Image 1: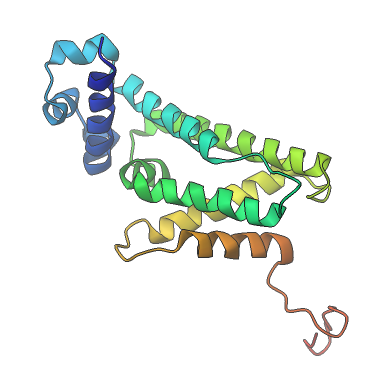
Image 2 (image 1 turned 60 degrees about the horizontal axis):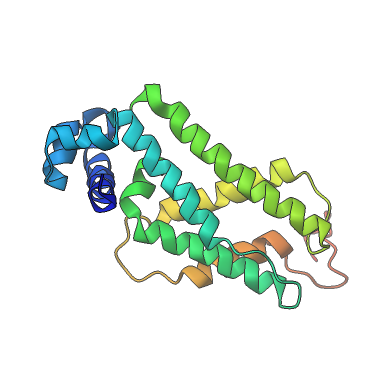
Length: 201
């Protein structure tokens, strides 16, 4: 079997799922886009569901490659920012796949596949947070909850710019997300305390 043919099928499936949604997409659409025979498809994948799952699996593997381990000899916040920027870059490079995952335009019976995908991502984030706590760059916290907060923020951020055609500064967006995570949105001053009576800081 050919690695190139398998890759062509995956790329074709990505386009087809994005354009038609999982439910309306058919194997015939995928093989026509890939330029292969139906029998060739079944040499690599048993079903439409299997190729869909494989696409999501590849996303997880690619994200793992892009998220680098923090080096304590350098600025950890800068490294976290760069990690997030690389994730955002990936979603822009793979807009079709990102739309499938974020808009959940698949068959309702396959929502569990996307849910499993996000659970895998959550575990990655949680693992990174736990490591950050161990090495002292992140305060002790509920890493399960914080992982969900981070994932939610990234998902909403990506959804907001996914269909925009203008140039997007992913590093700038990543920096805002990190700044929010580290400092929140309150402007500090006069000791950094908020006066509940008059609203002053």
